[in-house]
Structure formats: structure tokens, C-alpha cells
Image 1 (tube, rainbow, N blue to C red):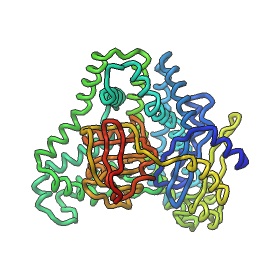
Image 2: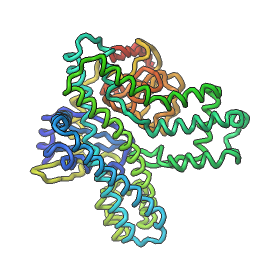
Image 3: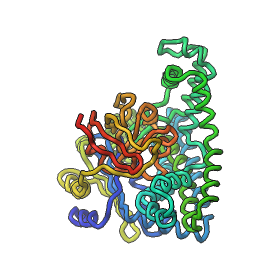
Image 4: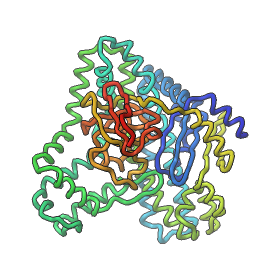
Amino acid sequence: MKITKLISEIGRHTWWSEEAPGVPLFCIWIRAFVEQSKFWHPKLPSMIIGFFKNDFVYEETPEDEKLKIWNYVWQKYQKSSGFMDDIYRQWRGFAKGITKEGEHFLTYSIAMSNEDVARSFERFANYATNHWRVTWGLEAADIFTSYELPRILTKELPHLDFQDRNNLAFTLSAPTQLSFMEEERINLLRMASRSYSFIKAHKGRAIPVKIRYVCENLATNYIWFFSNYRESVPFTATQVWRQLQDLCKQRNRAELIEEAHRLQGKIMRLKTEKQNLYRVHHISKKLRSAFEILECWSDWTDERKQVALEVNYYLEQYVQEIARRIQCGIWEIKYMTLDELQNSLHQSRPAVSYAVLKERRKFSVFVELKRQGMHQESIITGRAAHSLWEAIFGMQKTGEISGQVASAPVAHMQGRVQVVLDASKTRFKRGAILVTTMTRPEFVPLMHRASAIITDEGGLTCHAAIVSRELGIPCVIGTKIATKVLKDGDLVEVDATHGVVTMLKRG
């Protein structure tokens, strides 16, 4: 498609933006996006655009089409809910295939020929792509909960005020199982409480022999924990030990035990709260079905996130081995497409020039289109890429910072802002207000030190919403512009009742 036609197509949609550290090879989901119709809506979506700037990805998807996907699934669910169980079972098969092929590669890669590695990578990439094809539909919930659900709740429950409706929506759509992050947190708290005196007595950063085994075991179980869409840095025993030291420095033993018990009892408390809300409020059958989908997708979204982190961990291992074999830099490989990487292995040398890969890393646009049922992939650089950037981001205006209330333990609070786009490269100040595009697992240590959270992105089931409520700190999500308007050191007031952020003084 010509750039002029593509820009015209962009103008026909409203766009949902998500940003994160990312490289094309790790963003397999871009390729999979337009193929999710195999599992959800028969015709949609039609396109996705991924902008890459120096190892950072700006993902743009059509809001209007995602809302149509939600409504299609919602109508289908009201007729028969069983179809989602079938899709979930298919996804579990793909997830198991990812682990099986990834572990097989790690075990036998040294003895594999280039052709063997190419076949292994092809199998792995197919499993990973199918993982994303299936689970892309879950993100349609963000559009529904951001725009449509508040309007429906106002109509059905006019006797409730804004905050009560918001709390009801979050509670009824909340997951019914502990997230992998909460399970990891419980393991850390248990370890810290059991060895509290021992940990407090050791001031050094080296891991004592007595506790090394349990640190290594936890790190191995969550080795993918700090992966992202740019790289995978393995979770290490040293990091576990430092987290244990920090926990014991910040809390006494009784507080550690109390937090672990609170987390363990969360699901039972939540189920009781849901039952009470359904009993007290007259919620229509149609709206209840929406909450059933949201609850199911909240659980699934967490499982999806864990699998995505595992995918990125294995991808890093493939990249390092392939880089060695074809004598190419790791970062150059990460800007190849799946097909280009396969060709490089078959040729035993890079199939794309260094100059092309360097240009892609500096600034490039990956566009996936579906036209008459056919999948089209384009990589755009140079002036045309900048034209597409302007077509998307030139429409965005900065102004009042407002979004959706995710957590409101207090009505108003003030604080200094710290904008974080990459958690791995930022030293976050305790007590600052965390401002970011969207939080991810690697943000959890920062979230524990934040006094409030403000994000550009997100819906009811997003990571920031769930974690902020668990931590009991104010959180406003889906502002779209917070990271573009606010700067480090700005003094702001967060109205956690209405989701408004007011600038008080520039830093």
C-alpha cells in the first residue's frame, strides 16, 4: 500500500497506543495481530503499526476495531460461553509447545547444526506466534472498560456515585487467582520471615552459603521474570538475596508474615466481596456476562504475560547462539524479521546488510495489514516512516491530564513526579509519583517505592490497576499524555476520586 493511502487509512481510525522497550524480533505479536481473527472476530482487525526508535517500540492499534471485536465476543458469549474454553485449551497447547521447544534448544543447541537450529527456531516461532494470535483478543477489554463500561454502569446503577461504580467494576472484573508476581512475592516474604534474624545479621551483598540454595531455586523458577520486549536479563540468586535484604530492612518479621497472609487470603476475600456485590446490586444478565468475560480474561491476561516473558527469555537464548554462528551482532539480529533470521542461518551469514539493520534500529515502522483475507507485511524507513509518525502522533494534543481511577485509597494527594520509560535504566526515588506508559513486571520494585502511579495506557484489567490496588496507593490509568506532559520533579496533585492530575509547580 502506498504511503498516501496508508495515511488516509490511519485517519479513518482512532488509535490505542502502548509503548515499551522493544525490538522487532521480540515483538512477534505485531505479526500475529491481524491474524487473531482465526480465533475471535471473523474479519477484524485490519492493521497494526509498530514504530521502533532505538530499541523502544510504539504500538498503535485501531480502537474502533478492537471495540467491535469486544462486542462480537460479548454477543457470542451470551449465546454460548463454551467457545472461550475451546480457545483457551488451544492456547495452553501453544504455551506448552513454547516451553518444550525452548528447553529442547537450551539442552541440545551445542550439538545442533545450523539447519537443526533453523528448524528449532521455526517451530518455536510458530508456537510463539500462535500464542499471540490467540491472546490478542483479550486486549479488546481495555477499550470496553475505558469507554463503554462506565457509561453502562451509570445507566444501570444511577444510585451509585462515581467512586462506588468504579470500585464495583474493578472488583467484579478482578482475577480469581493469584498472579505470578504475587506468588513470587509470597515466596520472597516467606523466605525473609523464616530467615529474618540471619538476613538482618549479614550486611554484605554476597550470598551466604546457608541461604544460597533457596535463592538459586527461586531465581531458577522465575528466571524469565525480568524479560521484556527488548532483551532478557536472567533473574539471579544475587537479585533474590538483595530483595530479601531490602525486605528485612524495610519491615520487621511480623509485618513480613502479615503481608504474606494478606496476599494468600486475597482470593477468598475477593470471591466473598464479589458475591456480596451481586447480591446487593441488581445487575442485568447482559452486564453480568460482561463481568464474567472480564474476570476470565483477567486471569488469562496474567498467564499470557508469564508466557510472553518466557518467550522473550528463550528468544534471547536463540539470538545469542545464532549471533555466534553467523558472526553477527546481537542487536543487529534483533532487527531482523523471522524470515530473514531463518535465511541467515541457512546461509551461515547475515541475510540483511548491516546498513539496513542500523537504519531500522534508528527509526523504522513495521506495518501489518489484512486485505481481502490476505496478510501483508511492510517495513518502512526514511521520510515515509516520519510521515506515518506524524499521521499518528500529530493528532495527539496535550492538555488536561485525566484518566480512569484504578485505585483511590485517598481522595487527594500531592507529590513530585518521576517519569520512567525503562525500569532497568532508572533509579527510582522512594515516595515519588511514578509516571510511565504502562507498568510491567520489571516495574514492581519501583511500584513498591512509589506514593502514586499515573500511566498513559491501561484498562480495568491492566497491570498497574491490579498492583496499585493491592499496594493500596493512588493510581490513575489511561491518561494517554502523562509521560508527554509531565517532567521529572514536577509537583502535581492527584485527584484519585475523579482521575484528574493537576500541575502545581514545574520541577
